[in-house]
Length: 246
Ligand code: NAD
Image 1: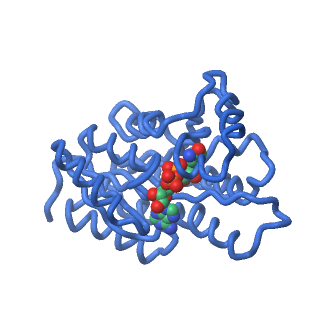
Image 2: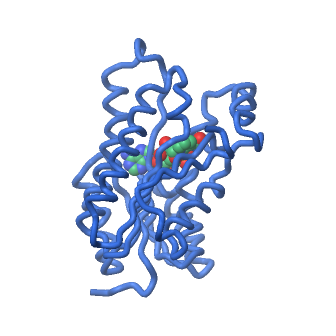
């Protein structure tokens, strides 16, 4: 077994948007990072190369988080390279908005499969395989308390993730593993910006008293804290990183 001298972190959906900022930040903090991606291999390979070029340790590993077997393969790849895993960031997610009346079965099944089952698949694997002292960090959304129209299926998946976060933190009693969730507010990534008018983006940016969108780095800073030595006393919590929006 080739035990890494660095803590080992898996970031799902870690090649783009908030996940890319998390991968970059965790690598800069000294983690060996496994950048998971679903389909766009070039993005993931390029990010891993960029991290390695600055002295970090990163590899890209393909896996669809909604598939339990693929999640196992992702953990297998991390263990094969480093011998152990310390941090899982369940970041992969999709946003698909429409009123309930217009939502098809296929779309509902897909958002549940990726956001909810994908997070469950990651949590289950992490609960079985993380080294004692590890960290599990889920990604929810600050849209939950806003009760916005068209967000019902998305918000429902994130509410379920928050529920599982607290329960899992208790189930891991005795192993010094913390389980928390981060709930970003509107953050400037493709997921948030795609399909929204400039006016709507502006309005949503002003919903918080700091009057701007979050950046992927704002959210990565919270992951850095929760995954790092200073964050070890935070457990079973949802950190609402949203500039004060909700
Ligand atoms: P993004 O679309 O830029 O990134 C999402 C990532 O998830 C992509 O890398 C994508 O490839 C990956 N992904 C999607 N389906 C996958 C699958 N089946 N298997 C593996 N990877 C998959 O979006 P983002 O804004 O960076 O979102 C990251 C997380 O933050 C999501 O969970 C999202 O719900 C959450 N979030 C985002 C915002 C926001 O305003 N951007 C706000 C609250 C919460």
